[in-house]
Image (cartoon, rainbow over all chains, first blue to last red; front, side, top):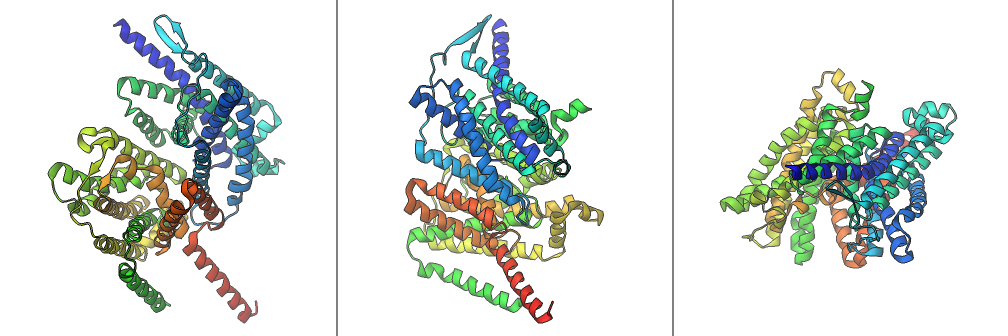
Length: 295
Length: 317
């Protein structure tokens, strides 16, 4: 009986900790979705590129992954800005039958990023091991791995910083204004094309941060991005499009659901759990968690 | 004008029928058969997404269900997988009913995401119900017929029927309703068009022919596995790109797109080695950026522009 509770507690805590890092990736996506109103299918690929930058720092230059992420973030910020400015932004004015053109372009970008990485690093599975990778903290009889805890704390710190940035700085306020009503923001003197560029860069940087935090726990290979794209979608919809706090809470819920699903249903079906939640939320709670809070 | 178009179609049909007499190498014939499969899927996708504007990211579900219907018949009942050509499309339609019921409650990007999730759920379920579907081991059959020419003509027949049916639907009253739903769903509703019903009328044939292509794929390739036939990138998104390249909401766009994509893909694979998918991806980006309505779509626009110029000159505007 006691064993059962230990197992349950451990599952819940691990799920929440992992969810915190998913949140960070999903917040990046929700920012992009909120401001640009597009579904960014390349988001997982950006996470993957961020992970590779941190990986290179760790293995070739011996930089700790938690410091390496501060190199990965600016690199991805720049990459995101360039992608937005020279590729996605061009499509805004293009006249086409289906409005899903931008989504498809992000698919193309995903292909290109994945394949560039594959060309450089092959499809080999890689991992970063640090001195503390296999260490664990014990709470009673429950063991929690150290990278999970560090990752969670850093992820929450970033979420808080981002919240401060969005609510307290001029730039942050402009981003929120553009997300709410682009035309009105433009009338108020917001340079909307600059804002979208920065937002995409910021989203990419957050993706890189989340990826770097997950690096000590995940195998790294060029297709790992698909996993994160799917997760961040689910979280974004769950939290309510464009809502930062919604995404943060959504991430925790998905982490928890996956962890419980993997322990009590089966490893194979744990992704189905997430997808089913996703569909249910789409159908019955289209505004996500945010709409619950408002009610 | 109509006669000219019909003559062109007949000419192309004759060329298509005569092709295997000219191209005899099995590898080239294999590519032609792949083109036919993709053209069929593209045409089917185009009905739902191009004409009715409901962009589906989950057509792999129908393709996979079609393929597995054929495969499971052989695996469990020992029947010839050719019966799958009947069962597969029907099963795909049956699967489409609940999918439509769920996804048509949503619009635009939400619809796309819902279909994406549904497609993935199918992949995972087929992957995990190992007792019934063999899971990741897949299903391998021994094809009774190995002549590529035979498969080519069956595939050609399949494509011809698909194009004809889609053409007839699009040029009937239903087709106009579908386009009106794509252009403005609220306006369509306010004019009294039962939008959900007509979306389903587009989805069912679309699923039917995608399932047919899946069942044919099972017969031709003789090996399926959930990660192949339910693949998000290689099936669901690939079919979108095929249609985008050829021309959304055009009769022959998907076929042109399929021919170009498959031939381009194979050319790159043989000439560029490991960089082939990269070059492919770059081309995908360029096409979407510079040819947003596809080759057939932009041709129409170009024609219209030149005609307008002529009219402008003679009218002295």
